[in-house]
Amino acid sequence: MLVALDEPDSDLIVATPERVTFDYPLAGPGSRFLAQLIDFPIQIALIVVAGLGAFALAQLTHDTQLAVLSGLVLAFFIVWGYFLISEAAWSGKTVGKYAIGLRVVGDQGEPLRFSQAAIRNLVRIVDFLPLLYGIGILILFVNGRGKRLGDLAAGTVVVRERGGVRLSQLPVASAAPELPRLAPAESALVRGLDPELRRFVLGYAERRPQLDPWRRHVLAAGVEPSLRRVLPDVVATRGPEAALDQLADLTIGNRNDV
Image (cartoon, rainbow, N blue to C red; front, side):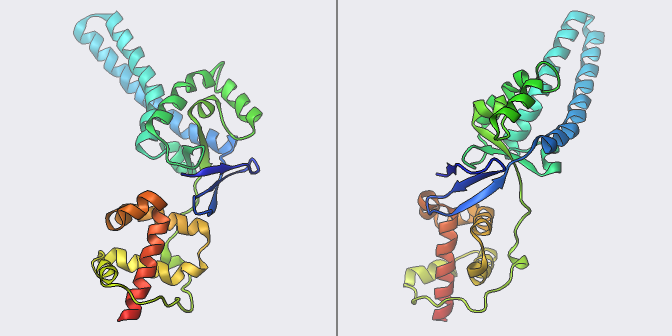
């Protein structure tokens, strides 16, 4: 489990159980406002579509009250559900957040849960008051951690995403450390790796001495599903980074056996 550390307000610093730390730059009001400027027209377009649907319903049923009620209900679910569905299904992102490079995460850097997305977006109704997020902006400045009421209630924070990390962009270490020869079971595990994963692990092993903790964390997170298939117990107990390091050690040891 990740543990949040008390650091300056510009960053969210988290640490893994292995005492490796990495940080997320916190999103400021400006970038969050820009994301809203992108999301808002999308919501308006959806509301217009809902209004046209309500108008068509009124024409079919000749019941204006039912059509108006249906349109209002749909508009509410669009205003609230757009953010809820987007953030829950897209790992804390909406179209606007994706375009600006933002993401909603838990207070300890963990992926956003559906319950957190539901809470933060339900409280959004209060944040919006009295007009255009008046309360939300006030609370955001007062608490000093870039949190509106919805974030405080849900235990979330909006962060800036760093650019992706690729092994091909990183230099190769001059020499990889040699490890003891592998046991037969370990050697069989390495030989049974998917070729693509094996190439990735070998590239990681060669560059590992020059990787900072944040890059190691991002690379391990990118191949976590594959690591879970190969070393499920290690991933479950120590995390994907420990599993990737273990595979890297085994890969080097297997190469020494050849």
